[in-house]
Length: 448
Image (cartoon, rainbow, N blue to C red; front, side, top):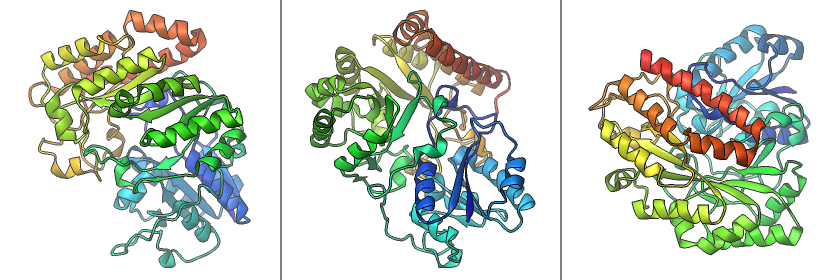
């Protein structure tokens, strides 16, 4: 069967990090490899980078199955594209998968979507392509159906990166051009109340020898490890570094970590830096004890501050994430600016608190949500979906923008980025920042 695997382009009103980064669609590369192994003819369409007409591609391809992947912000876009697919190819099967489909499958219920894959996406998709009836597939969502046991095939089959050959030169992660991605574990051993990734599956790891096999097949020098917490185990991290050395693998890595790991294992952090780790993304979330407790983050303010300094001393960059709450006042933003500027290079992503559907925070949130659940494109963790308690929405957006301008985007940091990463990468990041700056200005003028 001819299968079209589609990553859709975000809604133009969404504020997203794709202004700074476009990572390869790893889940579709896995699906491509599995479908090809099963005798099908798959093709990947990355609409973020591909300027061709979707309608024309459908007409020329005459696909029997069209599969979409996306997050909550893509729900409306995927529904619209499914309707286009059904109009042009009435007899094709339309399928949607991905983490949001697994956690909140009901969001994708639409007459133009035939199957919502909520478990074991690779195997389920292959069986659907083989002609198995959707009603017999436990990995396809049905009201009243119980999820099947999780099946992992990631150590049996590698993502087929040749499937995205025409896009690969444009895949990047913030300051790292031509960047591949790899996943070495699934889920997270922690369960922070605001975090969506912990709702997808229980924590599980891949065999490190197979991870090394896959790393050896990756041509790119830069590799983004997209585990929700790569450093969940110090023993595993040390073995990862040992195997890198044993196999003479030389890459530049970016990964997610936690502040408590960094502060507890400074020697491991130094070793990782010597093995090619350039940066960690750490969810600092807050510099206030009450907020860290509310999020069930299980780190302290002192650990957060110490972690940034440990990374700086090791020569690694810290990309930190901060959450600003509905009860914030101007003086809280002032305190945030002072806190961040206490670090040498405060490269930060500032997010208004977003009680994401499917998380415990959404179920227990006691603030007033003002954005409809059906306005999916605004649930991007950048739009303010709540009513601020002490500021207008306009003022809230203004203060977020002000915090960026006075920290990550101030003159000192702009000079650092330009000198460390070069003018070309600086220019790309500057262009992305300008795009988001204009989106925030529009929210200040007329909030959504």
